[in-house]
Length: 297
Image (cartoon, rainbow, N blue to C red; front, side, top):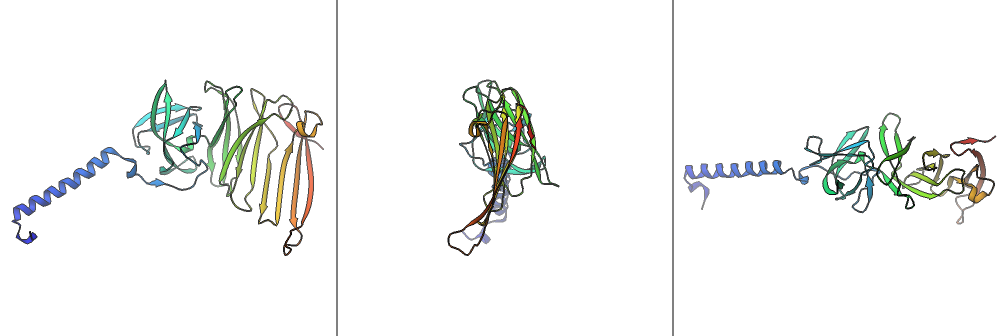
């Protein structure tokens, strides 16, 4: 039927009904606070969140919310070391906190043998974690805060026992620049004096000219003892610089010696099909007392 033939009272009633339904729909939408109502945050961040990744709470305490917002109802507060898993690959509602602009993610975790879910700001979560199968100790690290003026992350590495109790921690500043990837590894002690394991934390990039930096720690069962930092970088295949640490297991010159080997290569003539490099090698030697390294003359 043509609208102009509808009696005025019926038209007003119809318009009122439509308005009411729209209002009711919006009201219900707001009540449910479904995640799709929030801004999807697909910007890149160092956490590389995915549903297969194992993670844990890095901050001293983390608030879990019903929805991805500080204004949403508080579900829980969970302590550092608590294992979590991500339920979705995508994040929501990126916000600025501790100098970092990061999103919220939906997680699952366990409290008193009860499974729970909620949303957490990802800056409170570890960047990576590794578990020592021999002891059950968990080694993890995260960013405590970011200095935007000087563009460095204040990174903390932590060790928890199998009961999620903090055993040790160590901190360092990483000048990230364009670094976009991070990972860690637990390796053999390499026969280094008083060491049980070596824990390496690495930050790197995915393009030429972006340095890869590794911060190492010798774990003696009680402390994370700092090892010499090493870096490497390459530029379009015409230049490279690399550093590596050689430990007692390899150099066999005693368990109190660490050798840093450095190599720099620069292409002699980049017009040739098979590139030749002018290579310079050097090294630094450090004595190791079981807790600290000292540069040798």
